[in-house]
Image 1 (cartoon, rainbow, N blue to C red):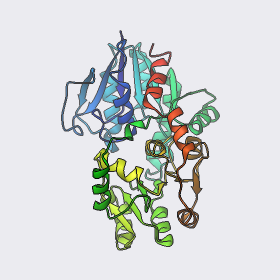
Image 2: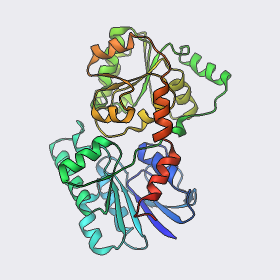
Image 3: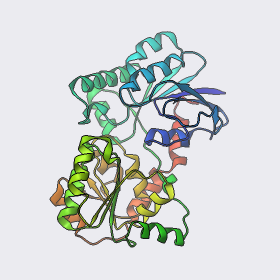
Image 4: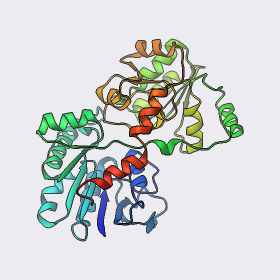
Length: 356
């Protein structure tokens, strides 16, 4: 049996982001591989010893923010022996890889995520460190995973290396919700089917939340925007500025998957403002519903949707899109079913030469 350690997530059961959903959907599916998932004891409310056949081990630090670097390094230290492959999600702790490679015989597979050093939220020192970590990860990993062709092109241009392209699945977002329950949820938000635009994301500048809100204000489009508004000064200012608009609902985070399904699948249009990163899980998930998508015009979003979305660069161009007619987008559904099902993504990870 192949023994694989997974490092770099908050943990499972998944309750945070894309990497957690990835782990949730690749563990427990292959009898020839035993997974060990390193989890944050600070972030996970229930500290299970096992989950879906995987062993869970806990690190007494938070998996994100300033503690993410020591969190990943400590996880790597505890993975030095007893594993055939170490799967690292993100580059926070990659600075430790030169030491790890000296002491461990395990193969190292690293998903470098979405070029974290380009995100606006980081200062100069943090960006320098993340760029260094990325460089070390690429040099000292046996296999580099890129989740988007734009990331794969970057790795080849920057480092002269080929990476393995594996995206994310999104079919877990499709739920079985009764008509009566859907009507109840829509009534709760005061909207009717296909009468509103919808978006959900972390409230950060690189997700262009300000553009989405300004476009809704310009066009008068009914907008439901779900996010962690009170987490940052950026979010608090936006909530103060736009919460009084009668056509805009600025909701706190929604974790109930049935509610998210109803709001996504019944929207007239889905807005995806992300400008950083690679293949974004929330965009992949939205594609399964066939609702027209307005996405910020960057290579990652064009590659994910194969140019089958509408693209905007500012509030006026998004306002123009929102003022147009909406109709079912069969192309997006076909792309999602061909490229972004978890069964397909899972098999790609298992088929990596490092894991079989």
